[in-house]
Image (cartoon, rainbow, N blue to C red):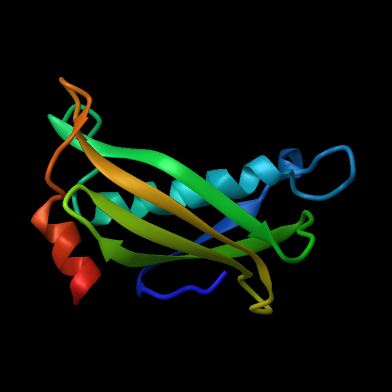
Length: 135
């Protein structure tokens, strides 16, 4: 996966013992939780993650490419990048690295669509996100 976009956030997170699976490495689903936590933290930083707001983000697809086995104990750094912005959508990309060594464990992506929470139909992407994606 080629990460083309603007870096908007980095967030360090510990790998918890309970994140590992029966094979002794971090379960694949945990990577998506890392992406989610980084995305919500970043949306909080631009004041766009209020759960009771009239509009908000919905993820319509997500993917991950697992590059290196991740085991406990470790601290990862999730780098969040913005890609292209559409009328109601925004591409986001993620790179998970070791916070100490910089080794890359995983790359991922998620497409955000901004929706009206009453109608559950797409609506215009907030200008703050459109501007961040094009800066």
